[in-house]
Image (spheres, rainbow, N blue to C red):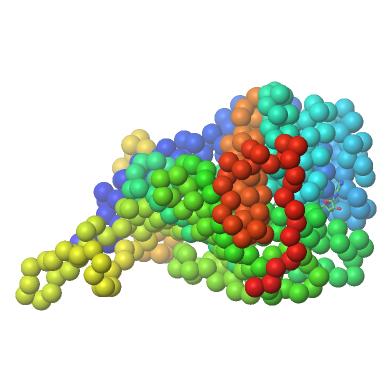
Length: 471
Ligand SMILES: NC(=O)c1ccc[n+]([C@@H]2O[C@H](COP(=O)([O-])OP(=O)(O)OC[C@H]3O[C@@H](n4cnc5c(N)ncnc54)[C@H](O)[C@@H]3O)[C@@H](O)[C@H]2O)c1
């Protein structure tokens, strides 16, 4: 007999029901109807890419397998980056060193902006002005004035698609988690804990041409540091899971460990206040990569989403790691204890007692595991068998696609159909606002309120850059 911490048939059906909705959303993203895909392949979107460094080349590797886009131009400052890009995508794209020449190229319909952060806004602005659709990597913009300027410009061009490179928005696993929350399986979700710890942390590349630019992430002139590069993804996850954006942020940040000439902070802890008492706590440190989520099965990064009825541990997959999503049911509140020979007693608030035993993790279910009600007897039994294997830890649910492929396919589809991206302008701007204000909170050592952005960058002074802090 299944004990109450095990997966029961009822749980399986409940989870499957929640995930069914997710699958409908995901199927919209992951696979267009065959007829649309076939048509799009003969009408592929001609795109160019500006900034073909590490991320650009990674995207090109994925773009090579997507026939609804066709690379016609690449642009970078260095021959080395252009050569690597060309080898990756193949074919014969035109090569540019000045992005304005790529934008003047009439054959380019859409532009991927994969430059360092400080160049996102100028390239995106000029691309929109040149009539192109834009996919810009996160964080969308760098400075307060760019938030206001891009909002005004992009909303004046509603026919051009603008997508932000926040790939978790396109992950079937994260979508399933969101659907579980919407179905109430986590109860009232009040808290998100997120971390991105690295060991040893970003290294300074030495002895390379244009060393400072090659290490742009490590300098405030070009980069928003750990918050822009790492926390940005996870703030967006918290916004999505809580269904709201923050009201205020405070934190502590210092530069303590990586002393190689960089001027960004390397030791950062942030607390975000959301409406109705909700919070996100984020930490980014170098020197340790352990993550306590998912039973320690994954290092570096992930999110723990806590609600009154349950908790989700979740982390994204990439080319080498599968995504992991699991949920733990909250023991029924109020928890009860039973001493030998005595009646069950309720915990009293404030009592110093070890909480009741935790529940075993259950998998977050994806498309192929869902109960649609249309299954044959055999299919239904197969699905229950799979659930049982997941629950015993013998099998794990696997996302069918890297969400990077999904976000790229979705971009081309939206360009062709006039669709609206999941990671749209406002998602990108809200995320950038959080990054900008977090860095001000860290530098100034104060609580920063999100409505302050309205007064920043509108002719007023941009916040000064304080000296590097040591703790
Ligand atoms: N979504 C993600 O998970 C993810 C992951 C990694 C990086 N990124 C983002 O991708 C962007 C690029 O990061 P990266 O790691 O590839 O950096 P990188 O330094 O490896 O590459 C940046 C490239 O841009 C080029 N460049 C700089 N200025 C340029 C200009 N004016 N015109 C043309 N090219 C120019 C550089 O020469 C370099 O080749 C960043 O915004 C980063 O945050 C996103």
